[in-house]
Image (tube, rainbow, N blue to C red; front, side, top):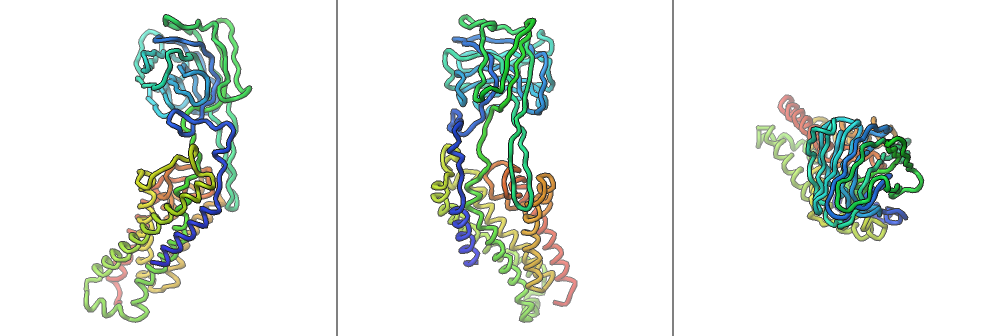
Amino acid sequence: MVAAVVVTVLVSLLAASGSGTDANDVPDLVTGPDGGLVADAFQFVHGPMTGDGSVTVRVTGQDASHDDAMAGLMIKDGTTPGSVYAALMVTPADGVRLRAMFDADVAGRDGVAPRWLRLVRSGTEVTGYESADGIDWAEVGTVDVPGLPETAELGVFVASPPDVRVERQAGSTSVGEVETIGRATFADLAVDADDAVAPERWSGTDVGRTGTGAVTIAGGVLTVTGSGDIGPDPPDDDPVQIGLFGAVVGLMVVIAVAVLFATSEYGRAMIRTTFAVTPRRGQVLAAKAIVIGGVTFVAGLVAAVTAVLLTRPLLRDAGFGPPAFPESSLFDGPVLRAVVGTAAMLAVVAVLALAAGILTRHSAGAITGVVLLVVLPILVASALPPGAAEWIMRLTPAGALAIQRTKDPTAGLVEPWAMVGPWAGFGMLCLYATVAMALAARSLRGRDT
């Protein structure tokens, strides 16, 4: 177990020293009001409004190639990407949404264009309304927009997020984005405010982009074309996961120790003495599982905490620092879950290996079998398309490595386990260990030793 701790920490240090990112060197890096990275790109047709007021529009049509395309009304602190905003929109897949500050999201009724929308400002509070006919209105919700200035830009907007293309082949992963274009038509545009520029005098701005949007007006219908996305945009890389990478190698040491914890008694024929002293074989198995699981958890926790603390300065020097990668404490929820989860994962793998040793009574065979069960799916999934790779991670114990991530699942990384949620992968590992222990208990009761 001491060797497992040492190996885990050393391999984590090697992984951290060989890692690097240029996420903070991107020229158009955009940070939101809270300092986190955001996407803020769209076509905006707007004019200033001072004080309180409202704007109403009918989205007569929406032509989009992306399910998350947006078309609707927005009030924003100027046209600088990352500035505070509130927006009421129609989307092809999610109906009407009221969003603000890159993190607030209020769901309205289902439905697509045509749809009437109304945005009302009162101080820093913005309320959204929707209607199917422009007569009967329903409130979507109210959001607070701290920092919204007295004079803000008000108008209509169109955005369409890029499609992410991921290709996996022979352990390599290539990720690219393909721009999508959204188009929407607006009519019956009206502003009700004491001090606001009339809609016919509004101008178009390609916020956060260059030359991808267009604005035309004919017969009182405003047609807006745009691309881009609005919302959180953190990088997929996870410094905590990199700092815990050594657990992938450490678990192989744990597997060997756990298997020998079972098979060594068979090799020396001491198992007969054990069963003579404690005839209830199920209790013997349970005691062994508690001991190996508990010791492994403690050793894994020491290794995980040490690895995270020692790799943090190395990763910061390699570019994994603010603003792309905000500073985090060891006691932050996601980080604490990753650290404790790594120890729990190693403990459950140890119990699985113990059960394999009891079943086979053969050290080399059990160690090889469990290592292949955990490691082989990673190698296979690394060479498969994202869809197939994700299913392999969901159905094998290898997916438990997702417990080390502090970020949402994504297909844009080399590590295939990054595609599944932490608890889904860990739950599958627990299921394997439970089935193996049940088979081991049945095997112990059904044979002489």
